[in-house]
Amino acid sequence: MTVAPGTLVLAGTPIGDIADAPPRLAEELAGADVVAAEDTRRLRRLTQALGVTPKGRVVSYFEGNESARTPELVEELVNGARVLLVTDAGMPSVSDPGYRLVAAAVERDVRVTAVPGPSAVLTALALSGLPVDRFCFEGFLPRKAGERLARLREVAGERRTLVYFEAPHRLDDTLAAMAEVFGGDRRAAVCRELTKTYEEVRRGPLGELAAWAAEGVRGEITVVVEGAPERGPEQLDAAELVRRVRVREEAGERRKEAIAAVAAEAGLPKREVFDAVVAAKHSAG
Image (tube, rainbow, N blue to C red; front, side):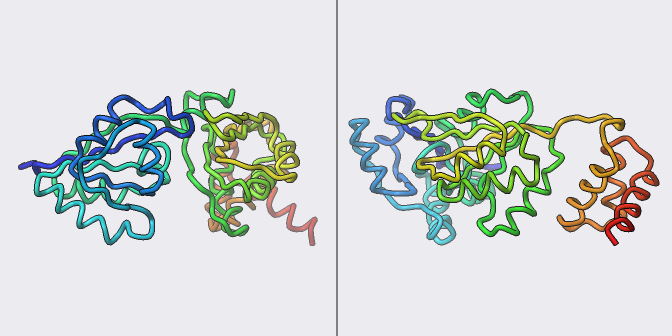
């Protein structure tokens, strides 16, 4: 396999405190042939703070032009350019522009490397006080209430710690939806303005955090949620079995598959879960 002569460099940028910029970031900004930035105005502020002037061409690369600009950048790479990709904060492609370019570069056998930098995901996870040995990053939840609930129901039984990004004006609705699906007593942490002057980590049950957020919250938000508790068969009563089946059905599973999955989770015979669902249906009627 022949590797294309150019190199794509994904560079992490500070999520708050400019002093967190890795030394290599300034070197790459100064030396790249092309600097692709999510916001060129923010890039200008970053380079001024670091005391560096890019020698290469600066282009915008954001959600609105990502599809159109990717082929242009790939051709630059194939022709031998060193292209540096930076986003507004954190690592490119992590809920930010970059995935398309990385995938296209790999497809053309272009070398892809990185300047490791700050990450809101890992910083929030480390500060949350919740288990960090196993976790999954879920990015941003859908804006529409119904779609948001459906997405949360998909991970209602997830035992790994969950990490989300959220806009401040949607935080109260998101926490309320999490409390509804995961339970109001599930532990969580809302990490706000990480590494900035007014950094705040608010820890507590989802129900309490939802009430707090209802008053209004500002800043960049990362939410960390405890995974689902591991429960034995004796801890799951009929009502809980029925609830779990309903959650799966509302997420799009057929009842037969939902019953089988819940039975497997609970370590129970499928017949026992089926009987609980039928009994609940009769009592509701």
